[in-house]
Image (cartoon, rainbow, N blue to C red; front, top):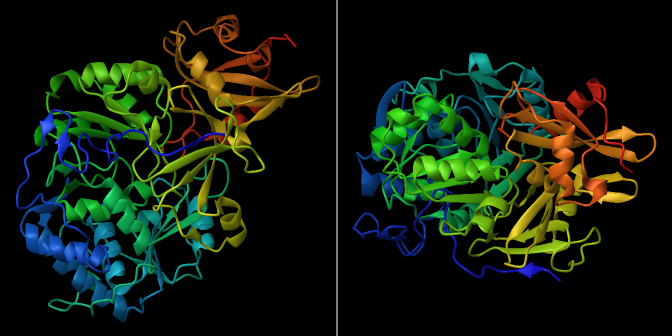
Length: 550
């Protein structure tokens, strides 16, 4: 049986070097009048937190953007009040659903806060989506109103109520057509079960599903996440689009802490490095692909990163070489995080003081307040070391999938969240991922988990990135194809190279049977590996001479 509650206290936030007690990685963070953690958050969560922050922090910048002046906390509260009244005149009310197809800027943030003040439910469309993807998302959501910019309205069905708005990041122009100067909406009564937002899954293995979160989940996430390497009132660069669960469900603690959010419509490595240096930001956050881009940016050595105290990365596993390089170049510890949209962005973490085995090859242990279990296909706990599906139990988990009771029932079972990811627990109590449940393939009657194979192959010096996907085989049923981005494009590894390194660590049936060298692995809008596209790429490329060992 493998069932784990937290046995140590890893950093308590996805961009943290401090836990809830204010203990930073370089010692205690001094408490101030502004940094005392309240016993509980104000009523109605987001509206109450923002109103409280407006009083406590007043003119402190809440949002900085490249295209407009900063907006202070008091002004953000007032502007979102005025926009809420305008949206109410437009028909938005408690229980209404608002879809934002907007850039990750001030208008998005204001609309989300305004809708929360009305008790409406907000969902966001990632700006990186194509028109066809927006169509699927909008049809799944069936919103009462859509706010979109000219360049992000394509694909929204004609029968929906759509308002075109400006994407201006100026506080005086943000959603100006909706503002009712000097007016504010009626205060909502406290209701922990009032829905607040819908966050869509990435759709890396199927159509995206909308995970619904209520005040109860957002309050739990705020309590579990608050505290950071910068203490209170620091600067933060969101590593994801505002439509992502990493922004929508995290906004509560960020406002409560008086954080200054640097909103970027388009994430660019050079811009992020400039901001980290200029504002002395102590935490590098994002997904593995973004960290890799920062390390490779030609301007990296032109900056001073002595301010960086922690590198915290989620959204997918980080290759061991990336962790090693990031720790060396930033001069800071690296925490690899595992979570999902459905878990509210809360899950497992490697400790900042982890040894190399934990830091490079695992996703750590459950964070405080989270239980984890590894189970077989029938929902029974497996023996330690065996691969099974990772289940999580956390108060941050979604309420349900929007308009999908069957998928909800299959995913939420007796208070547990079935993640759809396979994992095993090692002898140190750390979790090692083994791919998606539906990524597994069967070669000659044996189950193969791609991520286990990828972890071995990625250790080869000639491999910068790798993904293993199955290809139909007339004898074995399926065989694995290693799709590799080479470290040196002019001298890519050979299949024999990969077979040799794989045989040293894996059973023969797990060894890849073929190799495909590519310039880059396909990523979806969430910067995650798109295995559907990758399978199509493999299908379009003939065998290069497979490893025929049976």
